[in-house]
Length: 256
Image 1 (cartoon, rainbow, N blue to C red):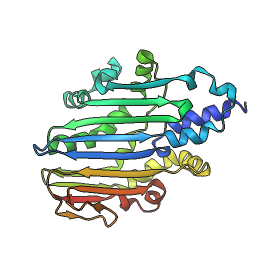
Image 2: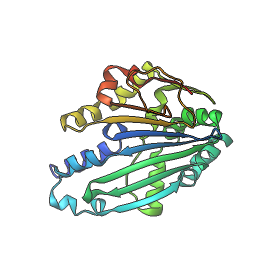
Image 3: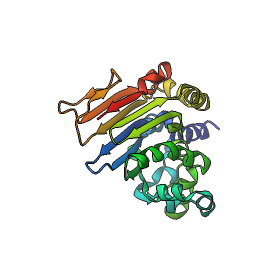
Image 4: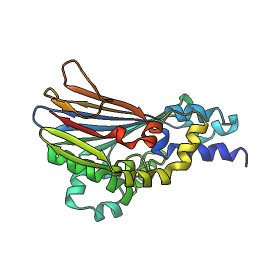
């Protein structure tokens, strides 16, 4: 049982967004479209946990997988999930991709979800509904299906489900998101054990948000946000430890 326990902890941590380096990228274009990328880097957690593994476990097939692939989010979903989606949800999923880069022996485990929003309304819809799809259709079904098709072999169920705790208001000239403290506290209750485990293993949990704009930013309400010299980039850097103590650190109101 002692040999199995580290393996169990390994996959528990990989399945929770609380144990990864999170980066959100927003690239707003002149035509009003926006490319959104949620990046989840679990390499730090992998590096720590690999030190707990015996050589026999490291030689198992799970730890020999090397993958670098991109899947269309919609086509990767099971037929049963596709049939339950609305037309708008299906179109959103079709314009999203899931990319996976994995080499456990080299402590590499990165996942990103990419979406191109046509305009402000499309972006707001995406940000409000991507977590719904990940929770209701269970995003782990995507990776399980991918595993059947391409041998990926990991569970990413909660990677974007956490985005459910934001309230968004987006127009062609503003990007507002406010954290819903009630939903955030509910999220913390579900993932508290993973946070505690990560902290005990000295695994950092940085959180970075980068927004690139086609026009200079007029106003930013978050004092921690860093505005570039040309005022076209806003960067917010914090970590989940600080956010748990003060959720409002993630609030952003940007006029541009």
